[in-house]
Length: 90
Image 1 (cartoon, helix red, strand yellow):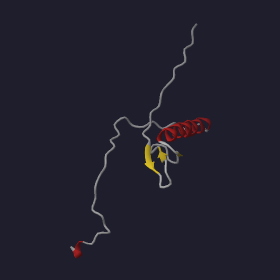
Image 2 (cartoon, helix red, strand yellow):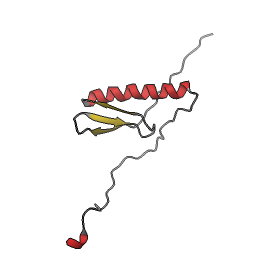
Image 3 (cartoon, helix red, strand yellow):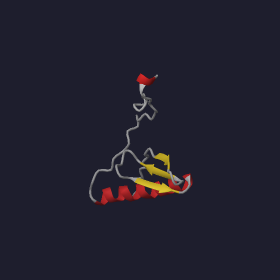
Image 4 (tube, rainbow, N blue to C red):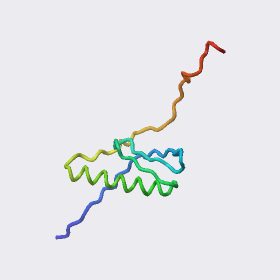
C-alpha cells in the first residue's frame, strides 16, 4: 500500500515597514509577536520566513492550533484628520 504525504502550504500577509536605521521591520498580523527585520527587502523576506516557520513549529510542538489567515482579508489605507492641526487658527 502506498502512503502519500500531503503538504499544506500556509500563506500569511506580511507588513514591511522601512526602519529608521535602514532596512525593514516585518510583522505578520495574524500571528502576534511574529516579527523580524532585514537590511534589505530580500533579507527581510528571508528573515520573516524563518521567523514564521519557527513560530509555527513552536505552536505545533505545544499542541496549539495553527492560525490560518482568512481568505477574505482586505488591506487598504484609511485617512483621518490630523488631531495636531488646530482648525481654530485657520
